[in-house]
Image (cartoon, rainbow, N blue to C red):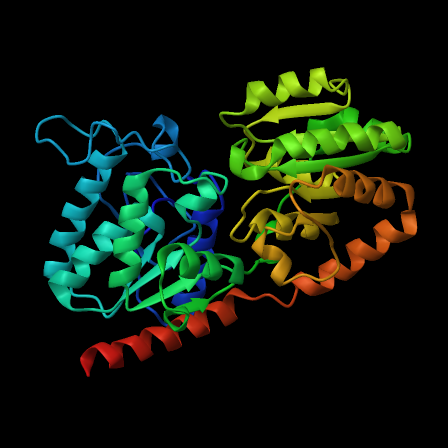
Amino acid sequence: MLGWELPPHNSGGLGVACYYMSKALALKGASIDFVVPYKADHPNAGFMTIHSATSLNPLHRNGMGAYDNPAIADALHRKPGEGLNNIRDVQAEYVSYVESMVKDKSPDAIHAHDWLTIEAGMRAKELTGAPLIVHVHATEFDRSGQGYGNPLVHEIEQQGLLMADRIFAVSNITKGLIVSRYNIPADKIEVLHNAFDPIELTNYTYDLRTYKYLEHLRSEGFTVVSTVTRFTVQKGLIHFLKAAARASERYDKLVFLMAGDGEQRDELVRLSADLGIADKVFFTGFVRGRQWRDAYSVSDVFVMSSVSEPFGLTALEAAHHDNALIISKQSGVGEVLDSIFRFDFWDIDRLADQMVAVAASGALKHELKANVKREYARLSWDDVAARCLAIYQHVRVGVAS
C-alpha cells in the first residue's frame, strides 16, 4: 500500500480514507506494508507495518503534503546531493525506497493512492510483475478547480492510469472524469465509494467552550452554517460566501463558521468584509483533534460548495454530528446520500434559498438530520475491504494468466 499520509499526520481526507481502508483490509486477514514518505509515529495503526521512505518530518508541516501545490518547476528529476528540498525530491526518494523494499519482499498486489505514489507503484510493478491498482481520490483537474493544472502531474496520472491493471475511483463523477479527460476505458475502472466509521468518533469528549460565542448565538435562535475544508479554489468558497450574504439579506438569524486554512484565506476574509457580513462569518484557522470535532458539533447545517469534489468525507462526518447537509452537485458524496439539498456550485441564489429554508423550518431541519443519519449508517469500510480483496484476487489471476 503506497500512500502519502496517515492520521494523525494528515492534512485532509486522503490519509483518513487510507487508514480506514487498510484497517478494514487487515481485519479481513490482509498483511499490509504501508509506505509513507516521512518518519513519525502512528500509534493507532498497529494492524499493519508502516515503512518510512525518508527521515523527514510529516510533509504537511513544510509545504509538501498531499494537498500542497507541488514545487516542481526546477525539479523534474532529482539532482544528487541537493537533499529533499521539494516534493519531486521526496517522490524520487520514495521510489528508491520502494525499489529496495520489493526486491526483498515481493507483494501480491500494489495499491497506489493518487499521483504522489503512482511512479513508485509503476516501478514496483516493473520489478515484481505484481498487479498495480491505482486508487484515484482526486485528479489534477479536481485540484485545480476544473482548470488544467500542472502538466507534469497530468503526465504522471496518465502514465499510471494506462499502466494500472485496475483503477479505483471514489465516485462516478471521478470515473467519468478519468474516462473523458484521460481516455481510459470505463470497464477498467471500479467505483469504490468511501465509507465512514462512526465508532472512531464516539469515544471523545466534546468541549463546546471552543465555540462558546456560537453556542450563545444558537441559544438565541441563530442557525450556524458551517464548512470544514481547505481554503482553495477547488472548494468553491467564494460562491459560499456570496450565497451567505444573500441568505443573510433574507433571514437575519444566520451565522457562518469557516473551519480550515489555505491559500485563499486572506481573500475570503476580505470578501466577507466587502459583502458586509464580516460580523457573521467566523474563521477558525486550521483545526484538528477536539477543535475539528467541535466545529461539527456546534453547527446546524453543513455546506459543501466544491467546484469539483471526488467524494467528500467531511459531509459524512458532519452528518454524524447532527448536521443537515447542503452539497454541491459536483460532489461525489451525493451519490450515496439522498436526504440532502443539492445545488450547482455556481448557483449562489439556490444555495442561499436552501440555507434559509433549513434555518427557517425546524421540522425540515430535523427531518434532514434524522434521515441522512440512517443513510450514512449503510456505508461500511468492511464492504469496501471485501470488494478490494475480491479485485486483488481477480487481477492477480489475470496477470498470472
